Image (cartoon, rainbow, N blue to C red; front, side, top):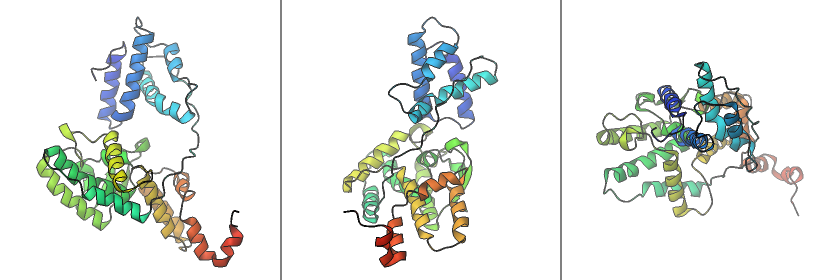
Length: 316
């Protein structure tokens, strides 16, 4: 935190300490944007000794090169910082308007069985155990990505999972650090729980007294870049399509929804359970996945048989 150098640096460090103590701090995203704001204040207002409305409004205004969602991501931590100061009567700044969230048009990758088989083969075939870090990587990656695949949790939730949040006796994950800080619980499949127990036994010897279930160096959690780099490297070994680790969450939702075809009214109960286990506060968030089910056409063809060509005519 010594990297902050503007007149705001004492207040920024105070804010970060508070957020960390509250388990509401995302170092990979929040710190980077807060650091950019700190440098902006230092460069544009080198003689300032207090925060002004002009400084905040200029920074939080949407840029010509930005979409609404990217602007929201950039200024979110600044808005949070100002709210922190206002609650403690350390500023009278008016919080700027936040751009309206735009619906995303991105379609997640539809994994095939062969692609997933290739990916996990790569995860299980990592070579090299020269250093403790390399050995930890070799035993962590197969478990980490299988947890994403089998539970649908977010990559951040898996990274931030603490030892105290994993009940190995019952197989229940307590997801405390989540999107929007919505605490929820997940019950692991028996095969995943067995794998987590074996992993815990081995990793505990390497990192005694660790804080995070998947520990990194210096008793910290892995970074977002660690997830992205390892997934990209292992995925590209045996697959040619483009995919991301986060899309394993999409796959989890889609596979569950596809399985419930023909369940009648029971579908609604299962859909609610899925929504809660994925940490959604409203069902509309889960319905987003339903609209993206890539296997729906196959299911529809199987159910309608010859009528399918009438419902969905061939494109000439």
